[in-house]
Image (cartoon, rainbow, N blue to C red; front, side):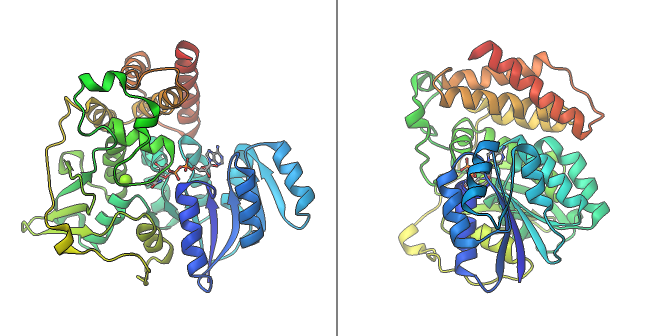
Length: 382
Ligand code: NAD
Ligand code: MG
């Protein structure tokens, strides 16, 4: 039995994680969950999975829930989220971080310090805290297993080979909702159109990140920290079918790819059961029906945020935090109809110019910069 601490339980990844837990109830037990505002869903999860500890975004919701469930412990806000990640002292445990945004960093750090293994969907954790997390993982000897489909694919392609034998990693990109539009056509796109991803059904923030290609930039940084591979060995390619989830070329020119239908429950199932590979009832790929697969160059002129993100990653220090905070704030403003789609990239560039880099990163500095940049964007553009 593996004991699970699920952060972001009500979201797209959270709900699909619960599907895997439901289908494997002899293998897993949910001990703690954390969510933000979707209290109806929180109640459903409590009724079905009976966690011991539950954290929500706001105190008033925690108080109401406590009245309905007197035998469960409740927390709220940032402290509650950390409490959910560090609750109790059971062995054979796994924290699944499916929170969206920079809020995921602090609970991940505290869970690692407690010696807990992490299954990570929250890529922002590695983007802003990669330097801290990689050191902590070694120090506390815990596993960090990616849930992001490309990184789960890469991990399975590498499958124990030495990092020194990797020639390059190739991360595939679906291209997002606007992949067939020119830059000129992007000027008048709507939120509704941006939220229509061609291949994946995901939370709103990552769906917009896919359309701007920021998501692929964040994934390059994520791959750099997860696999310890230099940026000049990490490439991206447009692959509209989302059937090849990523590829790894070794020095003997052999390329190993990971294929499957686009279904996040596959990497979630892998991460939850890791190091075992178990069965999953998903649909198998039909190659005859598929017929062919396509690849195109991902143009950095068409998708300037891809380059901006990789440059921020390479420059290290607080620049990735500035990039990520500017992105979170401007995507939020776009979703609320306050700015245009094109303004997202303009605001991120503006923030990278306005905020100096600092190579000496600490958790406090990252969280301070995160708030400063978000406040700067919100004050100026909302
Ligand atoms: P989502 O918006 O659907 O869900 C986010 C979850 O986090 C919700 O349960 C929400 O209540 C919770 N949450 C948000 N802020 C919180 C806070 N401050 N405290 C506690 N809980 C909070 O997002 P998602 O699409 O599930 O994505 C989650 C993460 O996984 C993101 O980092 C995303 O980039 C990554 N990811 C998602 C997918 C996908 O298919 N959805 C694929 C790869 C990676
Ligand atoms: Mg991905």
